[in-house]
Length: 159
Image 1 (cartoon, rainbow, N blue to C red):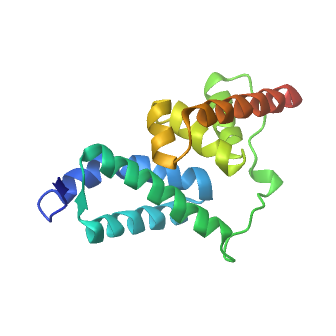
Image 2: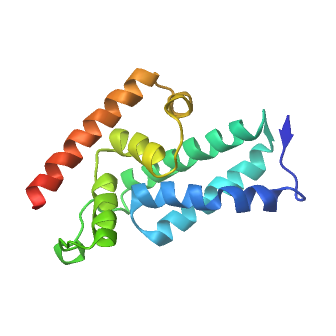
């Protein structure tokens, strides 16, 4: 049993804040909104206080960040459009391509984006992703395959 107290909260905050922020930012795409979502997640963690173990805490934070971010995206205060001048231009530079690819991943439909981001950017195993978001491992593999197919098409179109 893991109990969140004022003594151990800073440790868990430091361990997980970047992950929670990146998940939220990947969904809402606005840094200020992602910061608010991360703060909401950790406030909720304090209020929950009890977890089975550290893996349960991490899984709970992932799901909570995803749900809170999706709620913000669905809310009236968010617009789903991005100005054309804010999109990155094609470049042969490897770092710029990686950034552009990351943006493409973040542009995937939510169910594909979540598993792709968790698998490739957070290095979370398929079995943990499946357990965390409540789908089968086969569904995770299917979603990853769909995402790769869409990303491959997007890259070819951009060439």
